[in-house]
Image (cartoon, rainbow, N blue to C red):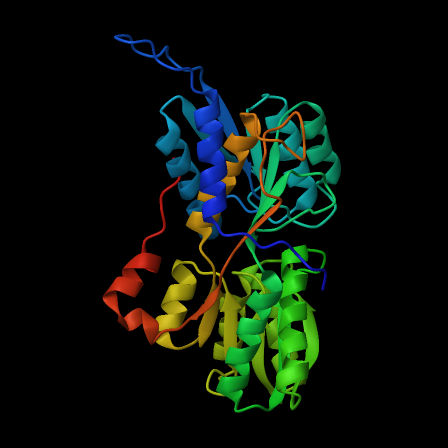
Length: 341
C-alpha cells in the first residue's frame, strides 16, 4: 500500500479560515463591508438520494452557511450507480462555472476527463468519499479505506471465533471499495489465517442484485459463515438472502456505512455490525477545501492559481452494532438522516 499523507481534519478548517481571512476586504471605520457576490458550489455524487450522501451534503451546506449566506451548495448526480452518467453530471455543472466542485467518484478513472475539463476551466475540484487520484483533483477528503476494511476483518474474526469461510460483496473498479476489500483480506491473512475469503461478489452497488448474488452463493456453498459488504447497499441484500434461506443464525453479516435500513437491521440483529465513518464531517471538510482553493491567499500553493489546500485528509472509522444503538444518544446520532432541499 502506498504511503499516504494523513492530516488532522482540523487542518481543512484552518486552511479555509486562512482563505476567508485573506480575501475579506478590511472595513473602514464606521462603514459596513460591501455585499459579497453570490457563489455556487456543486457536489456531485454517484447515487443521488443515498442517505450517506445526504449526510455529506448537509455537512457541505452547514460549512457554506458558516462562511456566509451568499454561498449556495447544490447536489447533483445520477440516481443509479453509473460512472458515465456521473461524468456527464460533472460536465453539466462545469458549464455553470461554479466556484468549486466536490466529487465522490463512482470509480477510479471514468470521471478523470470531466474533472480535468473543470480544472482547465479554472474550477477547483475536491474529491471526497471515493477518490479518482489520477484525475488532477486538488485534494481528497475521506477515510483510510484500507484501515476501514481491517476494522471489518477484526470484527468478523471475533464474531466467527477465528475460523470459517467468508465472502465479500463489492463493486469492482470503485477504488474505495477495492481498498476496503484489500484491507479486509490482508488483515485476515496476517491475523486470522483460518478465515478464508472464498468468494468476491459483484453486486453492482444494488440491494436487489446483492440479494441475488448472495442467495446464489449461500445455496452453492452452505459453509459460508460470513459476508462483508464494502458499501451501504450490500448488507441489506445479504440479510434478505440469508433470511429467505433461513440462514440468518448461521451467517455473520458486516456492512459498510449506514442508512435507515441498515440501522433497522442492526437493531433486529439481522446484520451484526457495520463499519462507519462520518459523512457529515467529510462533506463539511470537502466544502472548506473547495472554498479555500477558490480563494487564493499569499500562502504558497502546490496547485496555482488555486488556493492552498492539503492533498489528503483522512477521518477515522469504527464498528457500529445493534448493542451500541441501545444507547439513545448513539441512536439519535444515526437515526434521522437530513432532508435534501
